[in-house]
Length: 279
Length: 322
Image 1: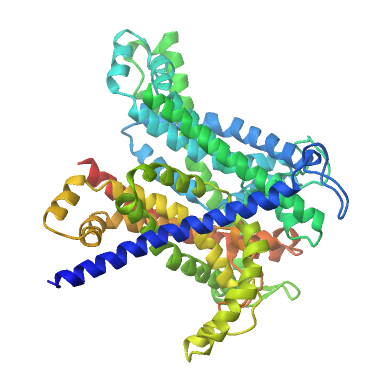
Image 2 (image 1 turned 135 degrees about the vertical axis):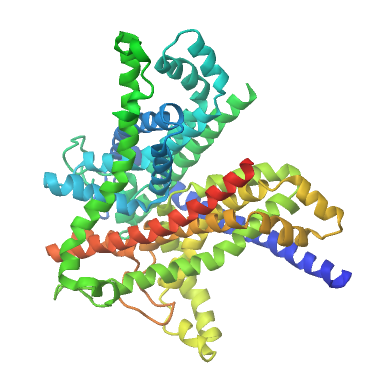
């Protein structure tokens, strides 16, 4: 056994290092946020929301990109949420003890962390090659594939937390299983399920890679789902790598908008569950 | 349909109530199958798309460094090398720092700060990678070029043997910069994961160790970390899976050069960066197929890493469930 002083010194050194690590990590992340706010806020103005993406060195905004992101995210959630909730319901209710559920849980966890650019390639093969052109719909499907695993995971987890006695009480009163699920299990698990959907929206609102070769981008305002559509992340990507000052400034403004949206969604998601815990 | 029959309710299966139950049950089953088919679909579609490239270049695609769109010759070695090198740099930095943060949050940190700091780190883990990318391009790369890289070249670059790792001109962008940005991106993820894992260690174990007179570091080193070792390795592999497939944080600062340099200060490329940069510009079918083949290689690589990660994390769940 090493001497007491030595052990104390080692302890002091290691605990200082860990505190230093925390300080360093928080410092770096704070620096990133400060730069983001400083550069982004300087570029933010009303025109960002009311005008479309400009030509180089002309005034303009991000309206088409913002609307495009909202449209594609909305469709992605509309496709992904029901599939995710139903699949999660199967895993926690009808197929709780089946081998299939184990397999799906494994597959779902892989999908949850799979590189998003792979999802982009998949949807490119599936919807862009077969239809012959890039489209907002393809972009939305790619995002939906990212939504599904998050919703599946939270739905299953939350439904498994619902006490079985509640279900048994409902069944004992003669309610069929799906009525029990709908009126009892979903109701008890609602806050957690809403959180899952909110986190999924937060996740896809900053995703760039799956849109690169599905929705592509569009310099003009468009609501046509069969045509390429602009989105905030892709516009940031293109504008940041351009040599034009006004495009770079818009990229920073867009980056700030996305970060604020993601943080707001994550905080709301947290509040939804914590309110439920208190009740 | 055999799965559906298990919740039919005997003779009443034909009445309307039981029928609606069956419809709903089938719907949930179908949705569950969609999840399975998605993963299968990803694999099949990538394999089909990559087929022309493998047909043309054979298995040599994996270890050929040539990437020439003009002569239509493609090999995956340079992006594969860049992917591995940037991920290794990222993990070498993010793992110790992330574990340090986790130990700080569970041991040293004043109690009132633990929750807010923990939440802050979890929130940061959700920030999209493109934010790290744009910051890396405009702020971090110039800083690397003017301060860090010249210093590295003048000091470590002069040391024999490892000097080649830090030789060449300071470009700002390059594999080291990309690795560092990746490290910053996975850091909050590793830290919050490790904190959650450390918190599963029963307090009684910690208290007994302290009762025996162990120091804080000894408790963590000899009790906490061994107790959760499998899960910790699983969490680190999960982060590695993220780093391997990360696209936007890397694409901005890697330099997108298809070459293998001994120096980590030089530009390179990764699989995801190559796909992101070149896919819409691929002019020949073979070029597109080669990029999809790169995607397939990345998918298989991350699949293995993620599957191993899951296996380890699940073992912890089973253990703590007892």
